[in-house]
Length: 199
Image 1: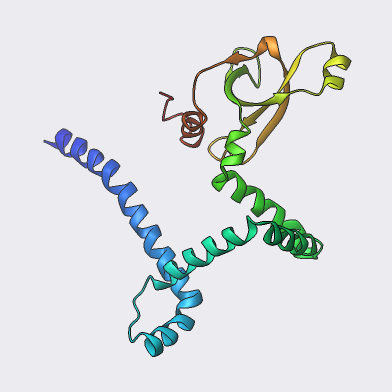
Image 2: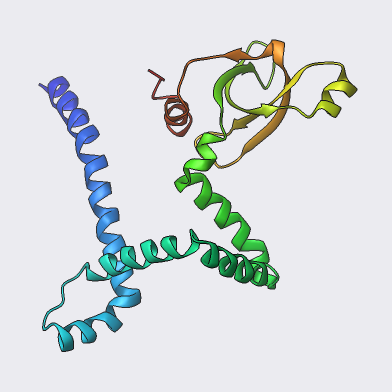
């Protein structure tokens, strides 16, 4: 009886915990957004529309984000964005914080970063006999290959479970094992710490 109870409890936990945490994070996001802008939106909506409900601030936030995205993708918006970004990174606090946060946002939300990973590869790293996933990013510079007299490839080896950081390596092409594993499958493997296998 106790064995079955433990089995059912663990199975239920696997299903319940991710769903509960997702809902909890969603509620936190609503409360956080309402705390920031809800107090300004609530009187405006009551005065002009006669109603207000929690979550309107998120809809407004999504609209603002889409508007900003539309603005910076055209020529004029891009120029304005570049101008203000150059001013921002000259400020003492922003100079240290902004570039790191921007890199994280690009890594998480931009398809351009993923498309720069040409192929998932395997290489013996950090030592012989131990294999790590890497992302082939480019052929190494010709000057480097000529200096080493070896055909090299640039490979990004991410760290687990957070693939935002890792090591940029120049690896002899003959030592790289090329795979047909997708970038998304490799990401799942890395983020899960090896729990979720590719395929």
